[in-house]
Image 1: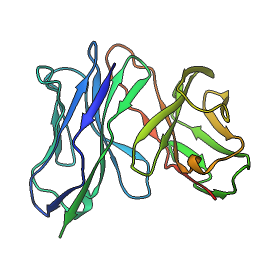
Image 2: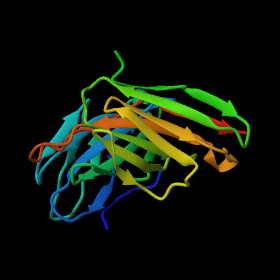
Image 3: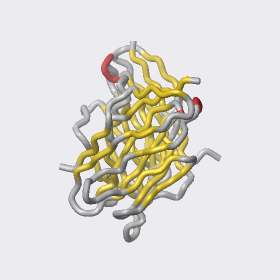
Image 4: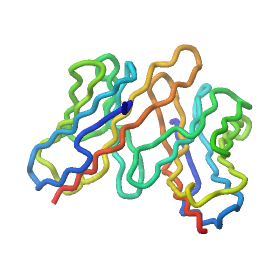
Length: 111
Length: 116
């Protein structure tokens, strides 16, 4: 079946470090791919998305490229800030309603 | 204006009680969802309604019953609450995509349910 696998956390980085959170997926057809962020005590917010192969989603310095050949959608940021500390979820949309989320990766950025 | 709003935000109740969580969206979306997030942050779909019709019903105990009076509202009623029901419940909505627009799903801020 369709699924999303993302790296286990927590990921702890110093401020201004480079961030990569890995995400791979299994799906039939051509799903859309998303990254969501959840700050403490809040709901999930869309961070970025890509709807077809080789698309790059970007927002707030974060980027992810839809790689069909490796079925991946890794999240990257060149220089993280303390305010980026949150839980990050990779997700895919398969069909009109079926959103499938990864298990989340907690990021902690130290000053 | 909050796009997806749910109430209450916090709920502490005793085992065996019945409780409801309400959800409303003002985005004009056709589809609404309930997700459960456990203590490890794992997010699991429970139900989905499209234009008031149930379209996704995952393996959820019968004690959980969703109700959609109109396409802007999806409420969750839980009977005979158990300790294991303690979690964060998220309401969400989306619009059925046309073509391959890959529409975004929008989440409410969550309802923290604690059963004691």
